[in-house]
Image 1 (cartoon, rainbow, N blue to C red):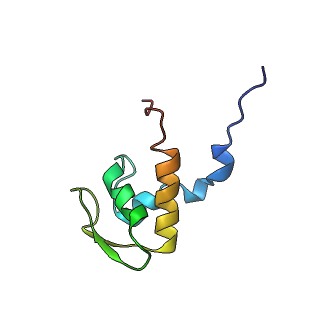
Image 2: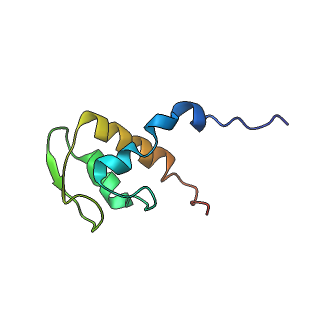
Length: 85
């Protein structure tokens, strides 16, 4: 059987890691709440949302880039497999 490729390392460049955390004002050591990511994905571009959780910024303006990053986080980070420690 062939060795598994680590494709995600090719997709996310080292200088792009943690940019969603920085944009939301959440420490990279904390996990971004799933409810916040889902709310960002549902909101249209240009609107402001209230953060439903107690972590990070209170109000967030949804931009095209923020929406792309949130969608990527939802697809990769909150997939159907549980998170490993």
